[in-house]
Image (tube, rainbow, N blue to C red):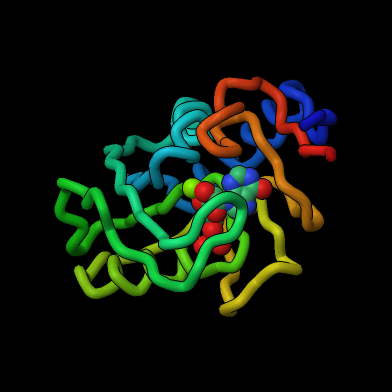
Length: 171
Ligand code: IMP
Ligand code: MG
């Protein structure tokens, strides 16, 4: 399949810094636990936390949703849990993209039960038109239309994560 650049590394860099500034203002004086969702969020999270002005601890979780290729089904399970306790802590979940909303709504509900002081979500990309369940992120890098994207951590069948730009797949 061919691909076209949707967001260049320069545009991404600018937007990630804006997001980090907004988050730093919102949590000024505090400390964050940043929870990245593997694998897709690892590059976005690495750039985001290095641009933050608040101290943070980092952790990762991995979720599995049954389904294959470009379509996710409704059943989500935790395949790797975080190791840090989040009780009474300010927690920021970082994800590459929200599509149907199933993954993030499941994770938010799961982590809420552990009693964080606050729990917010920062997504790099948002495909709002594709929701199967209502979900609104607190911080969003870019809204995109339907279509499959790769690069900057996002993959198509494990390919393309290391591309520095976000590219849209073309037939
Ligand atoms: P959701 O549960 O449908 O919101 O699924 C979100 C997950 O689907 C993301 O974490 C990605 O792994 C994957 N995903 C959805 N759309 C794309 C895309 O365009 N490119 C790469 N991965 C995607
Ligand atoms: Mg993912």
